[in-house]
Length: 210
Ligand code: DC
Image (cartoon, rainbow, N blue to C red; front, side, top):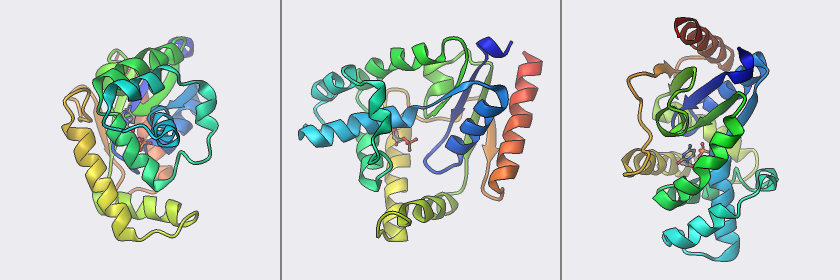
């Protein structure tokens, strides 16, 4: 059963989905892919090569050339890269280019987290969650992470998350959405341990119901 288990965890920035996805993967002994890192990798290469992020075809060529080692770059979590990732992710050609990559990774079982995993990448996943939290709680979490590495104001982080939420939810291809067939997990008032426990309960419930 575990061999072919695929689990989709979607949600906005700093909702806790990454930590939840990692822990669920470890619980079920599955591989985990943070798909945001793929878009962040494309964004980092776009920045390195001085490509206009609005040039969809040029950005898609970068996406076509993406290799797994890009995930090792240590600048992927920089504040500016998150925003640039959200801009390049809006191009349909870029999403198409990264689609097969993600599906190949999921073959044989995996946990993927992102924005469109349960809706587009793995619509037949065995379990699907949409993890969210109130915007100020998410901004405070992300600010704590970022301010350990760079000097950044809380307001800058809040504005950037708001902008990203809007762009990710309003784009025409594969927008971030809480789909009807997906359990909602609001982590606003939860510790990470509580959120992981609740996520596991929901995933196990969905697997049993299938
Ligand atoms: O999860 P993250 O914050 O690292 O993602 C960075 C950006 O990448 C996000 O703002 C939108 C984009 N993204 C996407 O469009 N689809 C995904 N499955 C994952 C991320």
